[in-house]
Image (cartoon, rainbow, N blue to C red; front, side):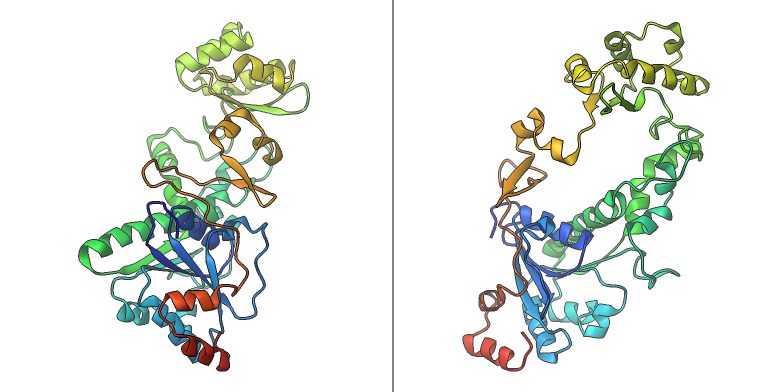
Amino acid sequence: MGKGPLSGVKVLEFAGIGPGPFCAMLLSDMGADVIRIDRKGAQGGSKFDITARGRKSIALDLKNPDAIETVLKLVEKADVLQEGFRPGVMERLGLGPDVVLKRNPKIVYGRMTGWGQEGPLALAAGHDINYISLTGALHAIGPKEGKPVPPLNLVGDFGGGALYLAMGMLAALLSARDTGKGQVVDTAMTDGATSLMSMFFGFMASGMWEDDRYRNMLDGGAHFYDTYECSDGKFISIGSIEPQFYALLREKAGLDDAAYDAQMDKSKWPELKDKIAAVFKTKSRDEWCGIMEGTDICFAPVLSIGEAKDHPHNKARETIVEIDGVVQPNVAPRFFGTPSEIQGPPPSAGGDTDAVLGEFGFSADEIAGLKDKAAI
């Protein structure tokens, strides 16, 4: 059990992919005791499966009634149940919210899907790229000429899914401790990704945002908020929005042309973008870092994943660590009273079945009986 702020919180995580494991990883890093429920016969346990770190695994045959009853006994002593199946799957297993909350009225039942528990698309398959397509987010990301560019699966799976599920379950956990009543948390990645777009909906309503990509301040349209190629083919990023930051950019980059005075004149942005691009092409990325990094320009080099671990700032904060030969992100956020920590490497599927059941009060005979019945 971890030492973080969630120490003592027991989480049952039904094994899944992508945002589900990432959410459970965050809870584990913050000290929760996360038990992953794998399907019997599942493969797993690679040290490279970073989002599976820091929990224990039990393997159950969820088609076996004795395995379902075993889960319900675990539910009695758990604080949170987290699942990421399509709507109706848990109900068909006999582990739907009504059954689980009847067995433990205080439990928080976290559900994550792409489209939500209801709606015309609820039962359709999908992935991050589809979910963010429906929100306006994907349409806004990409070059002026060309197609939208997926921002990895950060916006739907992890931002709009895992983080909203974690926040929702923790809020419900606080409520359950105050009221004695648990509840269902319905997390849809379309809902979360749309929520992430709140500021841009406000910009649109006020007339500050155009639906045409590359015409706005934060989508690459502005010459002072974009990435630029350097003489060595590497890139830098600038975000000199505020007047004082923009003035410093002009000073450090030698942008003396009076044309740059029209910072917020959108009609001038394409011309100024071409001019500033030519300036940044005159030096290497490292040279620009020597001139601008650490100043109030709002500047950073565009690093690859491989480069990020070696940057002095990331090294000083130990933002990226190496465990068992695997380079990976450290815990976030940080707590200075109940520090978070990586609780351990990814477990092997079912590798902790006996130990976990013992911790939850199952006797050796009961565990042996479940094995005889092929439930575990």
